[in-house]
Amino acid sequence: MATLKERFRRWKETRSLWQKTTDVIFWLLLIMLIIPGPRKVISTAVNKVALNIKTPGIQADEKQAVLTDPDYNWVLAWSPNEPFYFSQVRDQVVFLNFWATWCPPCVAELPEIQKIYEKYGKKVTFLLVTNEDPAIVEAFMEKHGYQLPVLYMGTTPPGVFAHRALPTSFIISKDGRVVTKKTGAVNWDSRATYRIFDELLR
Image 1 (cartoon, rainbow, N blue to C red):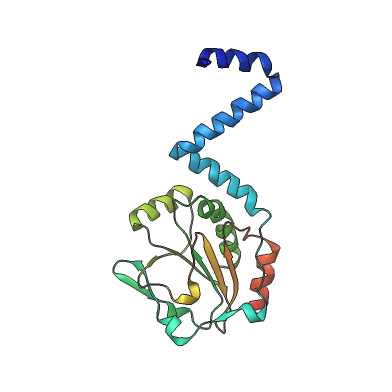
Image 2 (image 1 turned 120 degrees about the vertical axis):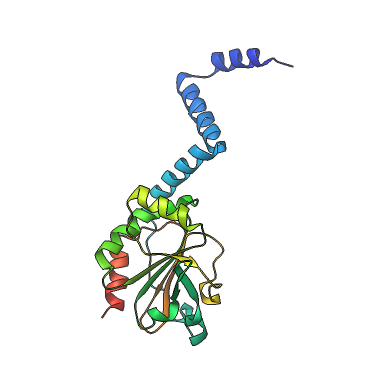
């Protein structure tokens, strides 16, 4: 059985400079993906590239869920002592996003959400919902300079907002139709989103 030294010598002699370079890059990436800190950075960067080609759209009418009165009974919170009732957004255009600070795709799309919030925040209600510790979330938002309305989970979300992955986002019309549902990092600061909002705000 060849020793590690012999394998290295054989690799050095049989691989071209280009092959050696790609081998080294591959192993460095593999090592970085195993270590938690770099893994998150790389994953976030990959998601940022992916979101540039992923834009939202309006679902076909037959696929649009419609919120019922019980759905509006959902309770969230601005803080442990400050509840927020989802019924407050009835008759409004709503952008609802489920996210977490530990989620690379969530982190990747936050700059896009911040940009679209700055453009439409006075016309569209933005709700970014998480079940993380408020102290962790507040520190994260402050570190990155995000000025986004974050809410914390109170009661379980209604079935119409069921999701298996983060981030998952919903756009809701004034008459309570879920016109858009997207999972994964999305390019929210795009003409596609502008068209959706402009149509719903008419």
